[in-house]
Image (cartoon, rainbow, N blue to C red; front, side, top):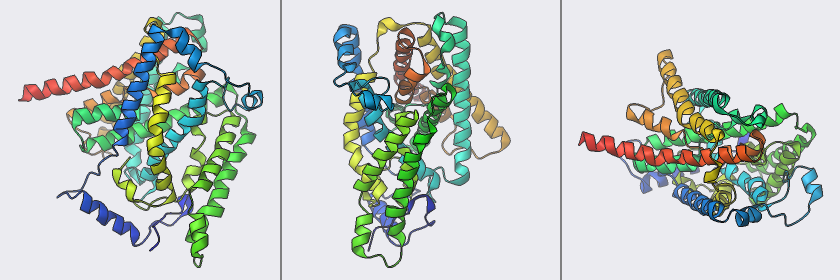
Length: 443
């Protein structure tokens, strides 16, 4: 029996047979008396370790041998003037821009996949009206972060170039990997609130990409003609690969040909070129083809380990990316995560205030307003869990770091903001200590 696929954005609502067999296999592996909480992929912990290791090495290098470190990450091996003219690796081709522009879109493809499936699959965590409350909470958190940034930076910022800064975009985007890493320590592996934390941080990361795209529009740097390439890639993929998978009478040879993963890699490259050349953030480069790649019929939860049983092209592609992404995130932290402790300045405090005060406050206020309206609040988001989730939303790394260059003038402001973003990670250990202290008091 052939694998159960959904044909992307235009497909039917359900697939017969094999979808149920996957559920049976999952239930056999993870039997529980009540509704099961699917184990999260162990790769999330590996990603966190890769980020912390890479960032730790980079921080040591920046503070002990800064000249050697910056010479390494800003080295220009080739003069690719033609590519740079199209915005492929803006502003220059260095190891730093190569990693952020070419490799990090792969990470955001995986993030986008999880959000897309949660939104469109029938049993997805965010299907239909379920997405309303998380979206409201994230908008509230973002507004809180923006207001805190504006107030603090206006009050204490002294740099002349601060008037041109668009640092309000930095509070968008909670770090998915590190928030989960510390959340797992606080709540324990398999705790249902971890799924709540995951889909909040996943939505926030995608919201951050949208905010970075808005910066391009505000700066007047968008070249819309190039957006024809990602549109062409998506349409080509749908009509030549996705749609044939669900045509009656299709031969098995043709079906297997349409079921390959490698054509999506080629189409992804075309989409990435169009996004980069248009002036939009390269991290968005692979997302236009995501809605049309055939995907599974059922959702087992965000970053679910059970997705390894699925054989549709999207999940097979994601499975192939899991291990390489450990190296990608290590290289990203190594090239972007070096914290210069001498860069402490008012921008550092503005970033910390936005993430540690503004975002949690906005999140909690919005949650209180949602409860007053009578809307159904997210399950498990109650009691002390609310406070810890709000605190973990104040950890920022990957998405805000990618926005630094577009949001702030170079030099001291960027390095001060990078230091602030790195220091937000301390929220994890601090919340863990608070959690253990409250448990000991109860005992």
